[in-house]
Amino acid sequence: MTQPLQIGIHTLKYPVIQGGMGVRVSAGSLAGHVAKCGGVGLVAAAGIALNSGLYDGKNFFQAEAEAFKEELRKAYQIAPDGVIGVNVMVALSDFEPLVKAAIEGGAKVIVCGAGLPMGLPELTMDHPDVALVPIVSSLRAAQLIARKWRKSYNRMPDAVVVEDPDTAGGHLGEKIENIGTGEYDQYATVREIKAFFRNEYGVNIPVIAAGGVWDRADFEYAMAQGADGVQMASRFVCTEECDASDEFKQRYLDCTQEDIGLIMSPAGLPGRAILSNQHKIRQYDTDLHTPCRMGCLKKCSYKESGERFCIVTALDRAQRGDVETGLVFCGTNAWKADKITTVQAIFDELFG
Image (cartoon, rainbow, N blue to C red; front, side, top):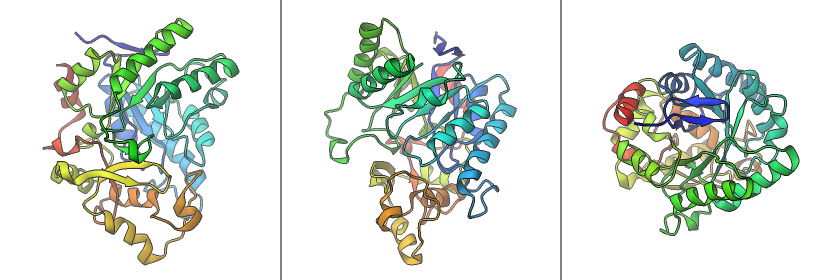
């Protein structure tokens, strides 16, 4: 019997967070249906304005905040009582306005990765019921966040997500040369972080395992290794409710294990994706001499020097269906997708 999971004041029927997938892969529909089934549904902030009807080519940051709130509204229409949250990357230029927009939109949980969210409690100070959940890959990162939050804001994380860079999809918080060496032990890190909070602060903070969780066996293994819950992203892509295009989902259905690998993002972070069209992703911006139009990232080699490619438009093209020149992020298990299913069917398989 699976125990409910408590994150802050919010009780989840099932200990599952749907991972944030940027540029409208996890928007209102997917987040709402995951929350309706008893997990945490996350609307991802990155590039949410694109393909929203609110972006006119000039008003990116304003459209981001409005589109973010719009997707939260859609999610709550699907799951009025659900635990609906957001994923906001620390690396985004408009990190602070997006956190504020999330609160205005009624987000119950804010998950932050791609950097350490040192000032997050200050942004949410007037909303103590909003659960704050950093994503880390090391004990050291968890310690830095906890000590800063405790000292400056008298606040603890409501949960911590431990992401495995060897298996997770999208942007990864680890140097590319350290990924896939076999040295990283995700569940040792989970147990260390739990012990740190218990020993240093006398609190039991839920620690969530992210990366490589595909089926019931993976879920049960994570729980047996000491995790309090799991974060799953790639598994939810091939559902009717996922916000990505049918062509995007078909890439998951068609890809092989060998197609999945690492690409250096202009954000300065490695990312895991389907790489069979890698040269076309870069060629698109090179051929068109496309300048950076949005400045969506604080640090970006494409914005600064035209190096690599524009990541947000590459992800946007794929989300809309151009998987020839678009970038499809995924975890290492994406090749296991063999059919389009429903969010409810995934929950039934995990917990039925």
